Length: 454
Image 1 (cartoon, one colour):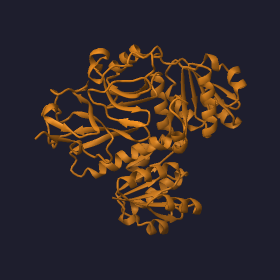
Image 2 (cartoon, rainbow, N blue to C red):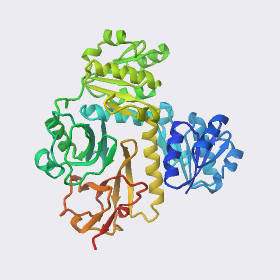
Image 3 (cartoon, rainbow, N blue to C red):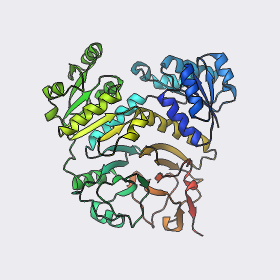
Image 4 (cartoon, helix red, strand yellow):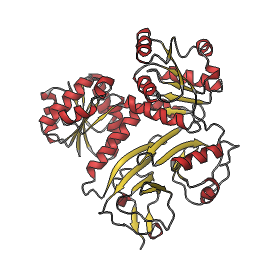
């Protein structure tokens, strides 16, 4: 497909990087000359220098012949105007990044009035991911599928864990109706088979119903209760969305923010939340404000170094759960697995949503539409949620009579609202939701990895 991306910041580059890997024809519009040259030297894409909301620039980028325009500049207004112009020029699909909370409240109105296919807000979606992790403190990552009918958690196996030494084939008999769908062992990432034996140090992604996952967590960790006292470092947009998300819980939230105006704004909006003016990487301030009694620590400033330093200090102070926002992928790649607890990356979260939409566009025959998609282990594994319709080729055929490609596994089937961890006797019906885990790139339909046995 021909895709135009307006904006070559972190989100734009992350999206472009993934789309190039899937062999799409990409053009990037960027207003900064140095950044434009940098993008042109690092990616096999066409780059255009100019204002993405300019008619002449859009014409030069070939927008009239584009299948999709993705506007992810730093300015919401430019993104919306760019999408509006693209729609008027005949682009059938447009996606806009909208960060301002006031605009984002009107997402449905904007989508309808401007003809947007989708709006993305990396800050809100990062807050959503943090709130999910706080529900399962033992997990480093938590995702919900099929309207929360299925849950996926990432956990690291400690030497004393009850999972240490357990085989994949005996997991269900010992720990309930759950499945390990992806593993990271040292630097290797793979989809496990029945003879796989869990070892200390493994990072596991486990899928099952909320009830079954909750039971698993209770069996393998003492840290299964939701935290009651949370310390946030940084009071920007992510903090705003996160506090709003946690408003109906019993969690006591304290924010440390180095900008006086931002601190005052949060106090006005959330009078029940304690907001302290100060720097989050100051150990004395953290201790003075009660770090030693905090159940969870969330570092979400705009500075990766501050977030990492304060998180490491929180871990050294034995805080039960530490969540760190990191913007730069190269920093995540440098860090070893034991240095931090849970890491969230807004650009990656936004990219997942866009790639899911692009894959859905590609699926011209609508055999099994992609409803959701998530990355695991630095984008080496994809978890894809498919909605199955009547065109599915292998309806009502037992899984034992199907071959699933190497590097893929059917992790669960949602049938009549129930989460099924499948075995060979289970079948897939029209109307079911199927959760697939795969290390293969570019999967757009379940038929890409499933075929009948000869």
